[in-house]
Image (cartoon, rainbow, N blue to C red; front, side):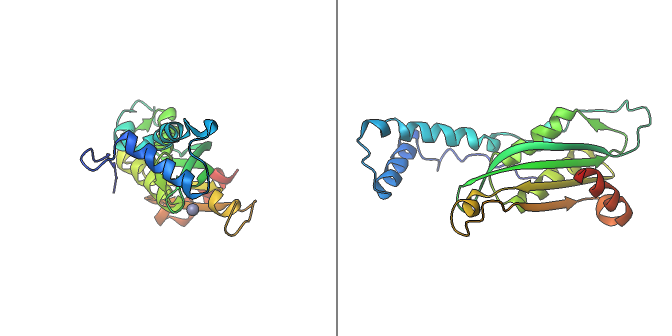
Length: 198
Ligand SMILES: [Zn+2]
């Protein structure tokens, strides 16, 4: 299912309230919020989070609703590799930089290639678990393009465990999600997995 979370303007705190929350956090970690170096920090932090999470405003299904139908009988998978993104985990709001590789097997229509990359950002720029993000990207492409199948593989680093907690600096999490023929046909799945991993 496609989720396009819109901000609820009735329950959404004001910018001033959000900045106050940052000030509270600074005081909690032992900072003097009145020292000159920190005076503008709350406003900057709030603006940064608006940017890091601007995916809530975008509709992924709308992005892939414009496509090309004149593909002259092209009937093989389309693969886009190395789409870099920076997301944030929903458990710690810690940064989650990673790379997505996506593929779909068109059925009469293809989407502009920049749209593939933008679909990744719509979901990356929300608070996420990597597992959910992988599934949402695949389902958005499947719903928008009605292809024979979609395959999404994501590898990401989770700052919440590479810089604290478990403290494993080089650990990467790999997830994948298959729809349509890539889910049901193991031969197609093996073929696309090899292309995505290349
Ligand atoms: Zn986390």
